[in-house]
Length: 389
Ligand code: HEC
Ligand code: HEC
Image (cartoon, rainbow, N blue to C red; front, side):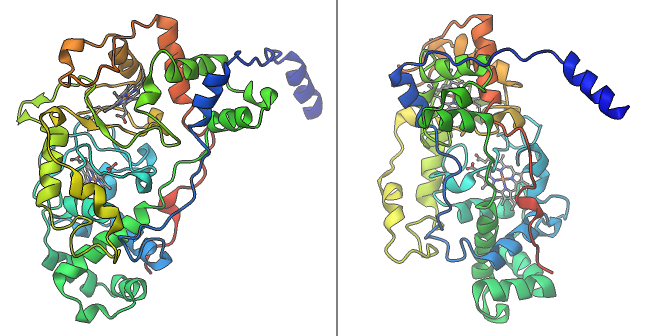
């Protein structure tokens, strides 16, 4: 009986439309294929000697979810970087001990960034991870409190000894705070985004398999075409992670009730005044090679209003959007580019951006493409691995 019902269900199911592949030109194929392959292989961060170390990752994972890192024990990293929300949050602007001026960025694929934060105020993941711990608006903690926490908890101490290969008792508080941040960084390097329908499509194009490529719904295919073509999106959202890693102005207002957000201009100044950069003594890479870019940045007038180009993997899960969380949905983002007000573009250099004047169906298509950058099946994520015990 059950078999008969199942058979009937199959017979009555609507016949799927024959899958179709748009007639992409050779140039379009080439531009699409540049957004892969995915995932990218793991490469240890040379500035962090515990990068990739299993004990350090377990310590970092434990600390990431531990509210004891915060002075008042109310917040953990995961409060704002929630794994269930693509390691970001639904608020437009983060709520620490006070309301922050910016939106919480997703930590997916954070190991691939070159500059960290919306303004690139850091050039490495461990300094970026120490920032919220010390910031009076967030954890408001200090190295002594961090050292007391690590030394006072037997499980954390044992985990530390294994990860760093030394007895925690002999390590000073400042080093311990930076080591905690390095363990947090090692953990966050494991937060990878999974493969998506777009990746299957891209790989199929790459190997010339038209039948497999045709499985991507047509709306998303038309969206890809706009993304690499008329929309010029791939000029900035380039490569496998969909970002060129640099800073641009796209006309999101940067004056807030608290004053102007200096964006990349302020970020460069913070970077230059920090001793936690790749040029400083805490970089574990003896030949300092990755610090070259940091030595050469210099704040220019055009850097006002510039923010880092976000990666777009799993972007459908990380609303709201932009550095200030001012756009609620992907549709709003696409409309922003469609209706762009050129007078709002602070930066004269961004001639690349013109109002796209998209039709409603083109807007739908671009949104369908952006949605195809999210995995359809979610397996367990980085939060479920081993902790210190
Ligand atoms: C109160 C909310 C909040 C908490 C708590 C918080 N963050 Fe963040 N995080 C943010 C915001 C907002 C930014 C963007 C900062 C900026 O651009 O100036 C950010 C940026 C980052 C970045 C840079 C990401 C990128 O793409 O460049 C990393 C890494 C990060 N946080 C890790 C952490 C870690 C580790 C903790 C815990 C020690 C933590 N955060 C706690 C809100 C928070
Ligand atoms: C000139 C470079 C540039 C171009 C071209 C560009 N973007 Fe962006 N994009 C950015 C920057 C910079 C931001 C962040 C701006 C901010 O927060 O102030 C951004 C933000 C976004 C976001 C929000 C992501 C998030 O996590 O908040 C999406 C989605 C997006 N762009 C999609 C597109 C699409 C679709 C196109 C083409 C229609 C496009 N972009 C063209 C630079 C660009």
